[in-house]
Structure formats: C-alpha cells, structure tokens
Length: 192
Image (cartoon, rainbow, N blue to C red; front, side, top):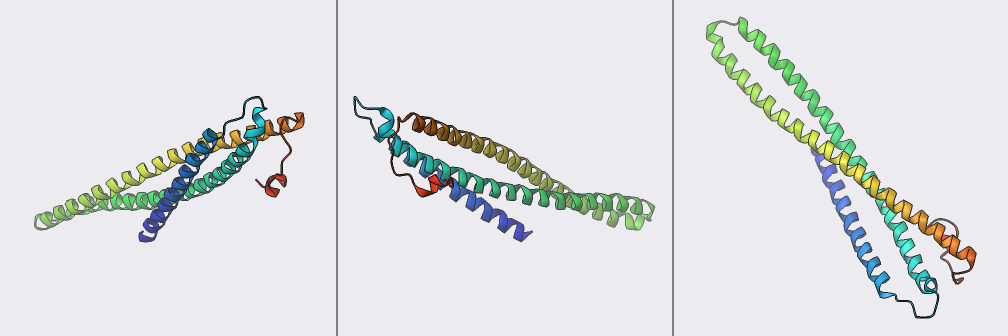
C-alpha cells in the first residue's frame, strides 16, 4: 500500500513537472510569434518560415511530452484501479464476516450478547471507514479516467494542428512561395 502511494506521488510529481515545462514552452512560442513582423511589400511567408519551423519543432516536442504525460496518466489510472479492486475485495470480505458474525451471535446466550454487540459495532465502524476509503478510490479512479480522456482530446488536437501545418508547408513549398532554406536533418528524415 505504501509503495502504491509512493508511486502515485512520483507520478503526480512527474506530471506536474511536464505540465510546467509545457506551459513555459507555450508562453515562449507565443512571444516569438508576436515579435516577428513581416516587412511591407514582401511575401509574408518568407519571414514566418523560420518561426514556423521553430513552432513546428516546439509543437512536436509538446506532442512528445503529451504522449509521455498520457503514459503517466494511464499508469496512474491503472494504479487507482488496482487499489480500488483490492479495497473492494476487503470491503466484501468484511461485509461477509459481519453477516456471519451477526448470525453466530444471535444463537449465543444473554451473557455473551453484550460482547458480541461490541464486536459488531467495531466491525461496523471499520466497515464504514473502509467503505469511505472505497468511495475515495472510486472517485480518484473516475477523476483519473476523465483527466485521461481530456488529455487525449487535447493531444489529438495538437496532432491535428501538426499534420495541418505539414500539409500547408508542403503546399507552399510545392508552389515555390517559401524560400528554400536549410532544414534540420531530423525534419528531412521525418523524425520531427
């Protein structure tokens, strides 16, 4: 149980760090886009190409980090599911034990009745605590599930933007609108 909590804290820390890096990169991208102004009388795309390439590389980096975040979120979801299943089995065993104990105690004599009632109350309190924890794990699991779906949706939007940018870049290159410039080897090979 402690190992699961430690893993969850590590995963949360990694997700937080990735989101901070991602936000910092997005802020840097918007500043560069606003700083570059095309000269009058020239083709706009000639001056935006270097910024677009950097933006494309940054977007690719953001997509890669998004995929890493998705893996971390998926691991977090799996961890929450495991904890939920374990806690559900414990709660079910306690419920079964409580039911059995009630049946056994009903046959006991009056002298043992007060002790049996005390044990039932203790088990009931323990069951109440465990059920509360079970609900907590269920809420965590559902929250992680919705966060994963939201993250996947945003990641798909970024991938779509990247594909659209590639198509637009190829279209402009084929028409000769873009100046030929040195392209990063990773981009030529299709890695980025």
